[in-house]
Picture 1 (cartoon, rainbow, N blue to C red):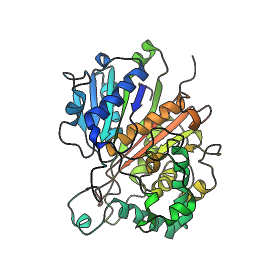
Picture 2: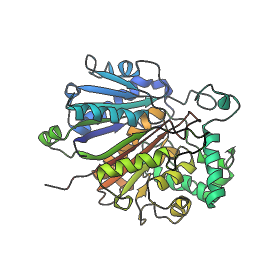
Picture 3: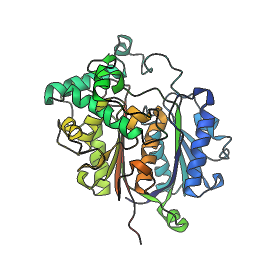
Picture 4: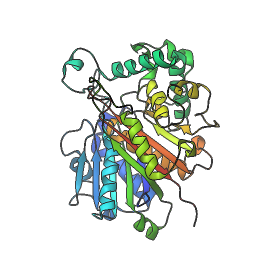
Length: 381
């Protein structure tokens, strides 16, 4: 599949900046994406705004002063995959011929929320099961079934903090040691504080277009080779499917793109908690099931490693995780990587990349949603 391309991307720094407000964050990200694409607001024919916790009409509220009022604005909520789902919806409009150029933007303000982020009002949340606890249960099960160690879990945070130190947009700007991660305050055993993403505020945006428009415009478009969206299946029933939402999304996107895991140069995957990177590198096929901890500890997914470079942005753990903006920020990092614009964190000669964004909150399902994109830097013609 190559009918759609990304022409430009932009994002704010992810940090504590609730006082700026969502409209200012969106305006900054959108203006950068338009400049990166070499387009004006007048060129955008439809906009899609992703946010997990914003009030109704978030797109209209944040885009009205960016020159986009009067044209279609569609609001998207899909948990942490809200922003990446907004990109999928934009692609659907482009492929259907409803527009030639579209904008996808994601935004969230989280730093002013005290305590765990709200999910649902069901009995399990009321009795204490929140997102850190949910991922901690996943980590404990992985440790029991496959022998993943606490040190391997902590090493995810060490790697991603080191990479974030090269990313001026990241929440955390300083590396940490393995001992610092392991000795930080326990949040949900076995996950310590430094293995949990910070509550960040921020926005990210992407300008997308049909391949025909991209060819006419020239420039350096990044082709979307494959994309998929899945939702989770029930976990408290007998006869559960053998493949998770993430695995099913990966298979569908790889099938569209006609690629294998070993073809990838760069990956951005969901690591809101350290176990996430281990689980989702396995889902992406970068290693066998249960071997994600070993893959990470070997250095294979670090700069200069033998496998795809994973989370060069610093990932959600170190870059930050303003829910609605996260999926588009992952795509932004991949676009910069494929265009050779990632400065010190650049993977040399990156040509093929993938992003996996997981949304969670409905704990009776293995996930609310999972999106996977495969992007390619086209060969020179």
